[in-house]
Length: 312
Ligand SMILES: [Cu+2]
Image (cartoon, rainbow, N blue to C red):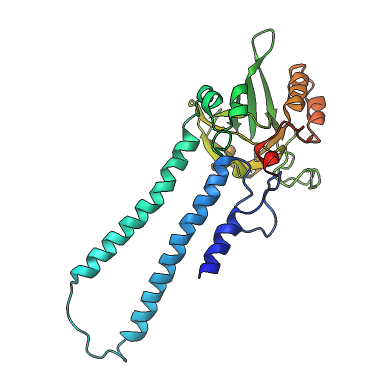
């Protein structure tokens, strides 16, 4: 029993791959790329302990009743209808379980929902606290708006504005749409996940993402970030994430939005800050293909000491 629980807890939290995509035959959640997802991994394993115990208890009770109290072995049933002790137990124990689950659950919700105060983190943040990134906080926010369309995503970077006052904006189209002239599926262009112009963000930066939609409700989702936010026409939703490790992270629209719902993937390329700057500059010049070429190979982080590098 204990071995099973350990397996559940460690198995689900394992893995530190620098890219995340669905793998054939894989079990469990994708490796965590953000602190948000690390916390969700733990929470998943934590709830699984209760879930396993409840399933075993209920199954045991059912088997016991079926064997011990069937008509053959219990010809003359007793005819009582209440038992105060049992009723108190089966009310109180579930309440205690729900409270125990709520204790880590609410801080997790709050952690992803509330935008962190970067000034405060930069000034007094604890470098050893895994929930804050004081060095990244000094660099401030980078904002990206993801607008869902039937069926692709428009990404807008309001921090990058041209001389005419327009923010950098581009459409990210799927490479595969289920037609016979789709390009081949390769490791670099995984089926129904790859796009022509990916969303690009710097590693070790606090990213504020906003979602909206131009037609129907979509949902901007990257499983390894632990991020899933509805994109609703006429409404601006907001969340944040920070990815330490450069890599390619894939997601898909997660709100049934029409016939090509399966063909509006999300590709996020997380790159070192200087590679991001070169990409953004080239995008501002309007040369999308050259910009895509710049982030085709993800450069490794230079030794600007991420928490992971420091731990090794
Ligand atoms: Cu959609």
